[in-house]
Image 1 (cartoon, rainbow, N blue to C red):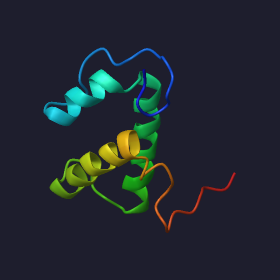
Image 2: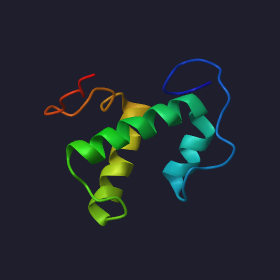
Image 3: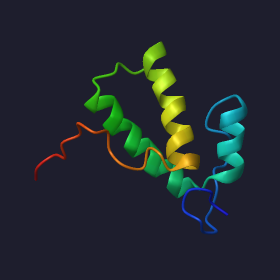
Image 4: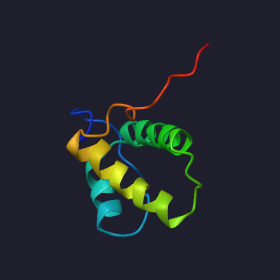
Length: 86
């Protein structure tokens, strides 16, 4: 049962990263929800102009993963987000 989508869906094959949160995601989140989070995080990186691989980006990544996948707090775009036209 996917914690994010509330349906029985295929899960991840392995934890997406080390640590307690990575294991929690592996046990509780579907591959579909994880893919949605990755797309969300790309938007966050771009909107806030964060450089991937930096400590700041890593901290934002873990915070957003927790909120998006489990707390529902990051399911909407950041307040200043402007959707691309096209």
